[in-house]
Length: 506
Image 1 (cartoon, helix red, strand yellow):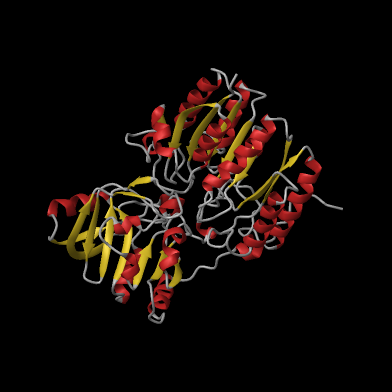
Image 2 (cartoon, rainbow, N blue to C red):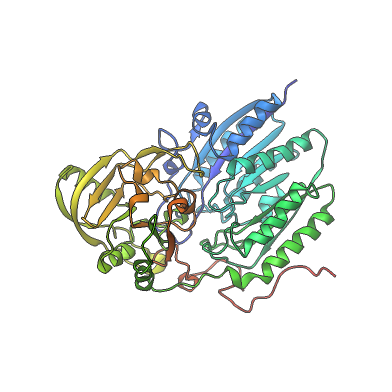
C-alpha cells in the first residue's frame, strides 16, 4: 500500500515592534483570494517554484506516494499575527493527518509570533505532535529562525536556508525531505543537537555569503556534503523580535549519534561566539551616507542606496520618507526609488490620470509608537507617468516563478527621480517591481530601495556600488532604540559583558 504524506506551509517573520497589523487575510498574498490557500489552490501557487514545499511535492512524485497539501499561508513580515492563523493551520493539517499519514513535511519560517504565543512554530508543532506522537516530521526553516526547544522537541528533522538573500529554499526542502525519506526507509536514525547563543546579530552583517558567518557556514555545509553528519544548519536569527528565545543558533542532525552531533555543533557555535563583535553593524547619519553616494565616481550601473531602517521585509511600514527627502535635498539626479507603500497617494494619482502634474504629501501615514516615531510625509511634485495593476512574475533567483501582486502602482516622475508608489508593501528583491512599470533600473545613476539584504538577489548584478543607509524605522540597526521587555538578558551587543552559555568541552 502506498504511503500517504501531508505537506503544509505557514510562514510569517514577526517584527514585534512593527505597527503594521497582520490580519488572517494577509496570509493569502500569493493567492487569488484573501486568506490562506486550501485544497487545490495550494498546489497551483507553489508547484515549480523556489520554495521548500515545491521540493516536497517533487519528492512525493519521485517516491510515488500519495500527497495531501491542505494548507498554505504566507504573510509579509509585520506585527504579531492573530492566534486564529495557528488554529486554521492546525485544524486543516490535523484533519488530514487523521485520515492516515506516514510523514509530515512542513515549510515554516521559524520567527513567527502571534498575539498569544511567542513561539508560533513551536506551538504549531506541539499540536501536531500531540495528535501524532510517533509521526516522522521534517521541517524547513528560514535562515532568520529564532530556534526554540519546542520546535526541536516536536520535529524529527530540521534544515534551514543557507543563503541570504534566500535563493536555496527549494534546496532546503530537498535536504530536509531526503533525510526524512531515508529515515522512513530505515536507512538512518536522525538525532538532533541544537543550541542558541545570547547574541543579536545585525542583519547587515550576518549573511552567509560574507564574513563572519561565511567560514562557519562553509564548515557546516562541508560536513553535510561529505556525509559526516546528515544535516547542519545555522540561523542568523531574527533580531527584531522581543521574545525569550531570540538569538543566533544552530542545529545538527546526525545518524544515531547525538554525542557526535553535539561535538560538531558546539564547535561551530564556539566559533560564532568568538566572532560576536564582527556581527555588529555601525550606523551613520543618513546625510553622510547620501553624500558618500553622490561622491562615487561615474561608471557602469547604478549606485544602490539601501534604506534598511524601513524594510518591509523585516516588518517596516515602507512609508518612512527620511531617506527620499535627503536624496531630494542633496539633488541626486537620474534616480528611481521605491516601491513606497501609500494607498492614499496611489488613489489620488490614479484619479489625476497619466500625464497629470501633481503635488502631494507622500508617505508618512503610519506612526511607529514602539519607536516613539511619528510619520512625516514629504512633499513631491511630478508627472504621473504610468499606472499598473502591480502584478509581475519573479524572474530573479529568489522566489523564482512566483506571481507577485503589490497592488495598484503608480510612477510619479519629478524630473530627477522616478518614484514608484504602490498600494501594498514589497521588499524589492526582484527588478520586476520597476520593470513592470516601464523603468529599467540598470540605466539609472542611483537606485533607492527599502531593503536590507534581499535586494542583492535581483539588483547586485547591476550595481556599480552599494551604500547602506541607516534610515529611521522599526527595522533600525540601532538596538538601543528598541523598548526590550521580554527578550532574554543579558544579550549581546545590548549587554556587552554577556558571558557565553556554551557548555564546557573539556
